[in-house]
Image (cartoon, rainbow, N blue to C red; front, side, top):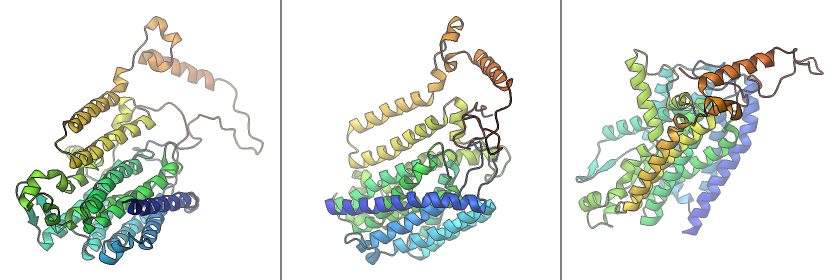
Length: 443
């Protein structure tokens, strides 16, 4: 068991290293070509920040696949399956469209068409859903058209779910990394635990996806120096969908049925074994929930489902009163709870401790979610002795306004030696991600 783990770890590390090392030059390239769109109404950052981070992530993907092809145990994935080539073909197409969008702002319908074409490219090369297990019924075989349509739908939903949630520094990369880690544990158990070779491609895809996100996160965590853009968000969404499709539609339930005495009994009694039917949704539950709520909200308001707004989950967290970093960590927490909870249930569904732990952690998550509502307020006579965050909002706002007036009533800042105006640290406008200033509450 140790040797395959070492090879997966090597693939992950190479992918992360290549992605990390490429991100710096890609940032300079993005600045040089002007891939720094102006601030939009829905954006949280304060100053134009370079995009095109997906270029580095695609380089990491190619490096990971190249290394895996030369490793003894992982080489069989390329010899026995065409799925890695299907993934690379679809990823290259969606990545190219994302790069063009980061620079020229492509129409949403064109991107949707490109997503469908990318999914179709993978389907044509064999990466498609062939059958799905249904508890109490058994294996349901799909016709070619049914499998192709279901595959395209899953790819498009996953890509857009990841794209919609990419609104805060490090949010999309972190959520996908958590999802990929949970998926890796599950798929590795199916492959190595049950000796089912059909699960090997999904395991490899999940390891590479983790490396892509880990390598990019140091540059993208708050304060972000570069954004992944649509070239990155659509790319990692497609890789995540490819992993789910590979293990959901390619693993033969008959092989798993050998461990439960029959296919029908296995599907009913060993429901955790067939968790791939639900796991692709659970690992991206937070992005999918955001996607569904956004579509319902925009349609209800008479807008296009593709119209941008500031009603996403991360915007709501900021509106409640969470800081940028805490909002990201809260979404990390919920994503990890759902994803790893599903994996833990797949290992032992009969254990009550798993259910109790999930319930307890959910309660902790609710407390963290509503924490700004529980912020203690000092009595009015003691407000001068405590930090502003513990004072009543009206008085705190007045104090902040008075402090701003005092700061601006002095002389102009002394010019720098080169004649440029001297910039005071902590003032909005220094850097889009590092600027520290009063954040207006979202409406």
